[in-house]
Image (cartoon, rainbow, N blue to C red):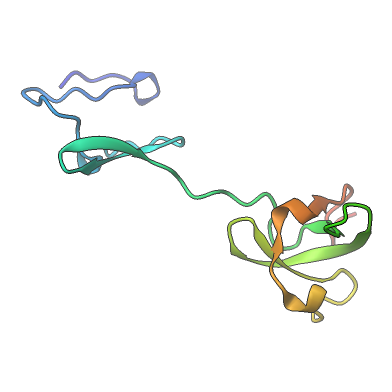
Length: 118
């Protein structure tokens, strides 16, 4: 196998191989996709959706009608990608919106310094 700088390689050549390499042969992950083997054929496996917000981020909640905006709240946790549990910005022990999982499209980041920073 020819060696090349990792950031310059797009294709992994394996001498004597006529099929696409498996994910274990590729061992160099791409941030965009992963090659897996399925019945001898390679396919692209999609990565999980990444969350836009992290615990501690200050956000506003927009009602489904699109007009009513509430907050600011803090993101208390991220139970799954694109879903958030909120808490009150002035009392982190109190969950907002009855602790329900809020979809990402209902939230917007509040600009400004992060809590605890001046």
